Length: 483
Image (cartoon, rainbow, N blue to C red; front, side, top):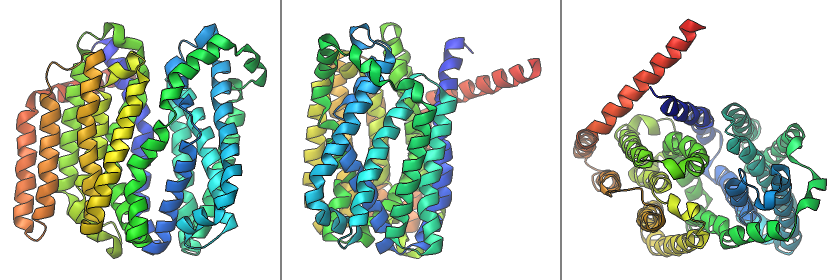
């Protein structure tokens, strides 16, 4: 195996460790949570996560993406410490200003989360959102340094704390409010500890180096991205918010539990995306067809993994409490969003490389508007099924838009073949699972047929992946023998 391929795979595996361990923790915690909490109580925790993410999305101001883009070439020749302190400082200041403004709406926010006015829940929202902002930048430091070990340790600890908080309260009281309070306390302490550990990145004195060229270059890149995180929140949470208003917190909990199971596809997506951004920015001048190869392999992996989850949905859903199992009917629709997002990461690099970030904003505006429209159309008529279909439909259309714009500035794909194959097979699985819900034999015959079809059309990619995996194992065993 070539050193470049081995290095790429090693880093991919390293940065995927957080996702694998997160998956294991989620796989263990979901069955427990759906038995410890009634849907109404678990729905409160899910709404807390959604609203704290919304508050955080107002405060990034595009600066997290500024840090990623300019980490290896800080503007105006300044240091990485200056860049980090500048970005995180402005984001945290924005969080404090937002908190002050939201004090006038604390009753509305706490009622949406907990079902009744609660100053404590509002305070938890503010503190937790600020902690998440700080964690985002601290994790980006390890990610951009390509330090897979420390990135994994930090990410796994954060996931463990999150699961520990609400599960321990599930055993103790089964109340969503108590889980939220403990979650906020543990997350705050976690961020304080890592801020001390990573203090070398922070220097208030370094802000003296911020001059007009530094400010101008970062502002030019960041301004078009300012609304993106909020729009991203809308894309990911609008169906939950609409369901909360129309169907109640029980529906939110059931839908979110199914979404948690469907997020097992993130085993592939998250680890890949984490390493992919710095890899692209380091290699786009000399990629020589490698990016298209990665696109093909990711399409193959995502499609096979998604179809496998759909095919084995019955034993998977036995893990959930009985009150949560009705979501099996729309389960495969939930795969399409992460699959399309991950495929888009392999086709739209031209937007970031060319620094045309205004297109990213336009894409997110279109995506949010489309998602809201589809949710308003489908959820009143189809309930949770409509929410899943709205999310899937938006994801597919946005994948096509991202790909078209990305290819305009940096051509990666000689053909859209693998996009159509992956989306087509997964869409067929989703609709087949829905329409044949009352005919299990026909449903599983269809899903089996789609899996066979995927093996046929992706056979060349499967062989490459298999040989590459064997080479990697041989290399690792060879190193152990030499040691």
